[in-house]
Figure 1 (tube, rainbow, N blue to C red):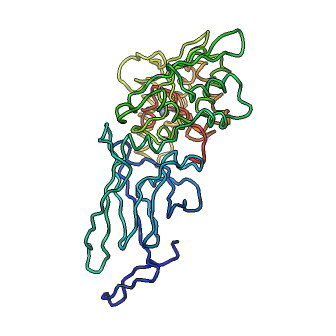
Figure 2 (cartoon, helix red, strand yellow):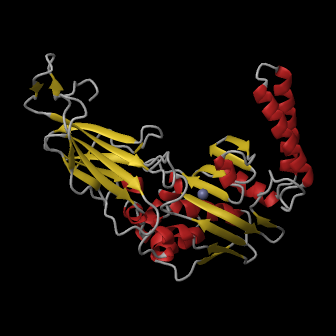
Figure 3 (cartoon, rainbow, N blue to C red):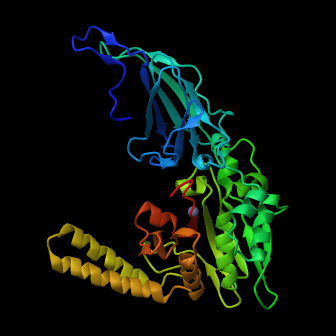
Length: 407
Ligand SMILES: [Zn+2]
């Protein structure tokens, strides 16, 4: 497509517009998601005249440009599949459809939070904008919203049959039964899964989160939120928890429309803030690592806080004196000392859970108050410095693999 010249162009004498028989137009969707996350990597595919453009695989909205731009023949219709609706087996809700007429098209899509006015994923009436410069063509400009209601429409709701098909053949029958139950419809946010031995139970609390209900006109936790969460998220978590003999597990976030990274909106993430087995209780929380004064968090010792503080100071020095190898070395030594203390105080159940998740074939990302692993096999200690690190100071997050939605 990029090899073709723009079909509608200005002649060299700047007086004549040359319009080929098959005139081409640019359609540009421009997203503003700054209401929740300015560089949200929304998965998309483009539909032209009812057919998804090839190669048929999900793309991600560019973090910087925020644009989806295509060149099509005049008279075409263009629309988008967004979010988990990009999966070839989903694709129920094409959105922001436009009919391309004699002008290029710009569609501005602005995200809004709150229960916003029953907005539909349509573009409305065009405002034809006069040329910015003499000789440049006019543009048909549309305005549209991206609201919680629309997020719900572009987020696939899995059925029990789909969940059953998506689960790996070798999944334990007790877990298959529990996961399928979520999509059949629960009567409360509780699941009891038999443990492997001793007749114990893994009691899972599925805790309602506010975000969907604050941003969607009408939304049920049990029948809208939970089934928009990918079945493999539950399967991976329950499988690992059951192997670790966990008796109580609190899941605090699932699919959600208007907050944070794309993986929760695409239904590929879960958050956990509490686990316990017969020996240990773990509140997955290390908030306060950077606070002044003594620690009030049992997962952060005073010694660790002091070592962490030293590391931050040495790291700042090393940044200021980039050419001084001594400063870098001092920063590295301080980091090792801090990380040793961080590791020494980590509850063994948490370590076991993370190691087991890291080996699990369905799991792609693990972010928690101790470590951040955005890719399998690559992790760094959570210093609670970056936004991502701070957000994960008080829970464990997992993302599952689903390359047909987001990878
Ligand atoms: Zn999360």
